Length: 115
Length: 108
Image (cartoon, rainbow over all chains, first blue to last red; front, top):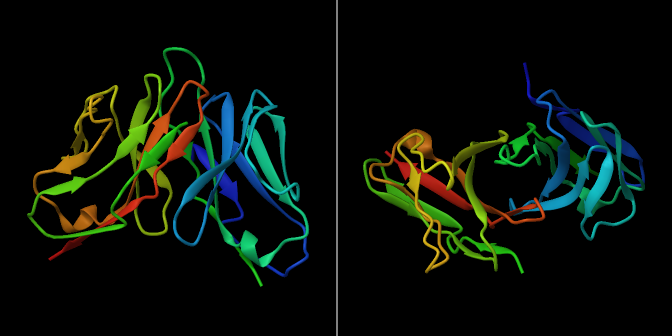
């Protein structure tokens, strides 16, 4: 059983297209995140949702729109894709409950290539 | 401001040599600190957290509040330890902030 699963694993698309990446976790965590890993392997948080509510929104272009239909899912929709959006996008989840806090569990990543 | 600094982009050692991956942090409160490992083209995996004071795969890390450091150490490196290592800090906002990452290369 995969704890945090992302689809698709690879995504190649043309500039200007709109695409979505899906993420699901079966750990019962209440908080989910999207991270971007750029070509220099630097990891930066983009968004965080807690129980379907947006709690962290870093400086990300508004072409990126997260959607959380329930606390087990956090999808990322990207409009008008640009070359600079090429990266690996990681979904993660964690528990915010006192006494249970710990590290995040990450998905296997979605490698997005914009051509 | 929360910040995590890993000064070395690449650390190359021979098999059997000791390893120390450096991590310094900046945080005004009491942070939670973690080490994550990413093997080639795989997901990030939690390696250690300072609260647990555990040793995983021979790695240990001690939080030094005076020096604001959380260096990762292993006495004898193995080839399978070759990977990207990230130090991370979690403050009271719950947000996990990563350092720039250090690639560990263990040569035979």
